[in-house]
Length: 564
Ligand code: U2F
Image (cartoon, rainbow, N blue to C red; front, side):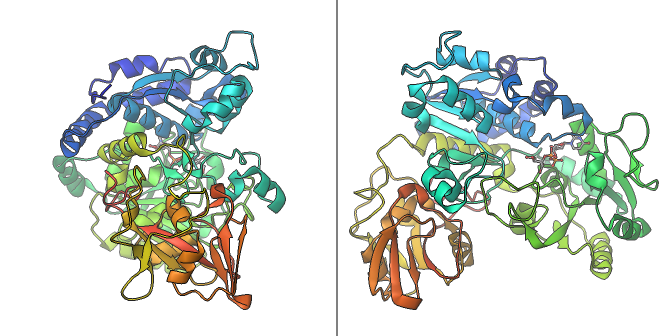
């Protein structure tokens, strides 16, 4: 069946159910964004033309909202607790619905079981039953529940599952045996899924799929109004919960900011001002989302205190014409040194509160400075007050951008198909590459046959041998490209090393998330034995990694030029 775009979201609002504060928040958001989604659908429909889109039957099981997993978020919706996850789930539901797919939504174990056809009271059902869904979107909590209640079907159908995973899961943590042997075991990881089945909030690592969310878009009239209505001396602090304001050095840097600007906050409080919020701050209390947006439209500056990490609010601020000022982290925060990231299945180092804002947006919209350096901080404030900045929203965070990306995933990603484009699993006998004329990297050979159905299409691939200690994520960025893990199998051969003129004295095949790689001392070349361990993330000074890179669309890093 062909999927047809939908622009009326009232049936979706019914499907979303009711009761919980979290669902109420999500529904309000979906309702408010309806016109925007409809317009985006029209535009995308025009862009895609007559391309066939399969209609899929999709189950969305939001595990963290189930009572069975404790539902710690819902009671905090009106108290300054995290809302980022709810923003994202609301937008995922809208995306799937607008794209025209068949949708079921569950937020309890009972509903999950009845949708999966597990007989009530059967608990752990040992049988495999036909699964009435082509795709299941869930989170780590939901994954656990499915494992417990789907019996053997879980194993059979796990390739249809997509896991919404805010901060991402790196391959080394996902592979059970490897994680256990090498100290990558966490409370979340080792599900042996294809790492692309994990979908993140920001494009953290290309090992996972970037799901994202949307921010409200402004039309030209609204942009014009904002330009006229900005108070150049108004700052809003990022932090709706009082605990975020307990940050060392606050007196000093807020004192400096207060010399130049009027400082506003949206901190939740019960009866009186939270002691963490200084008296000179004008606190509005936690605002409903639309009122928060209005406040951002007037403000010049949105300032972060270091937490929360990687939330939606800075994108909203920038979209509403604010400058986002944030602190640089030196040393970077990671699961090795910071409580918040401890136990999360990633080794990613976070160099500022919002790395996406820093690296994908940057100046003039984003300033990343050392808050302990008063001169640097003060100079930034002065410079920001002098600069005129227009509202900006990266395409990938618009409704059209999100629809486009998820459309491409749904039509092209298939983790149930036999593994790898290369015959024989992890190892390719002959790489379909040639050395580029400038002899620095490999390119797709003109006469090589195109792997049928491979997505992204393999001809977008270029491969480099990285310098020692460089991860493939960074090595590809160095060339203005993005690492593409699905192409590792093409490179995983002696032939690829040979074509790159790497002087291998010996070649071994082992399980290591840094392979394929070359070790200079001993001139050893290493191939990857386990396809699940192909990883863009990860580095060691011992290895020059062999890295598959590809191009990407401007403002849509998840998709290559020919990916649509
Ligand atoms: C992130 O969660 P948060 O919910 O803390 O992320 P924020 O960036 O603060 O913003 C979430 C939404 O809260 C809204 C705002 C954002 O869309 O419009 N809001 C509001 O409605 N009223 C207000 O007064 C202020 C903001 C992240 F998303 C999570 O994944 C992480 O778990 C968490 C911790 O790092 O950070």
